[in-house]
Image 1 (cartoon, rainbow, N blue to C red):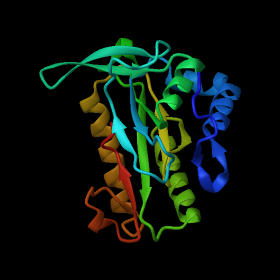
Image 2: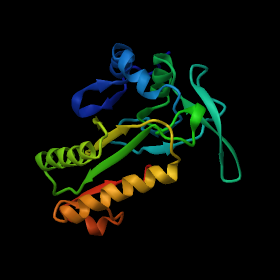
Image 3: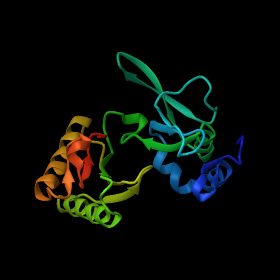
Image 4: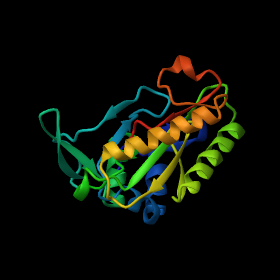
Length: 214
């Protein structure tokens, strides 16, 4: 059930909550396999993307019956994370004001063994879309040269994600080691285009390769 279906979530495009719910229903066969079985980190924007938004990781008592949960050990205890295993769950998250769904790179049955590695290309404001596109192709070429097949995802912001599917046979530390090495190689090879430094002051006119989500 959707309440306030006429609420504008993307005002400049005239997209309402009902529009987005109908879109999720239409693309359910594509979106659910990308989310199913994966804990989610969410960005909630109850009044639209251009109004105050906030992150949410943990489920509370008021979540919909359509949204599944998994308890994950964190900070000395266990916390419930949400999982969307159906279109109904995705729409239920939308009803909560969720506009960004960030799935883990591992699945609930093997949390410690990633099956996706992500290179998040986060451009400085001075970087053009064409330069970002070319950067994504450079990352693609590097990854293909070591024998993996990347694919592209858009993000909730202005960047791009270059993602690699792998067998869940290594742990997160090894995964992060590989993505860190790849990011630093790109930085050394194209120092005018890439930076692997987290501080925004180091990004002037460059693209930050965020491997830390791994």
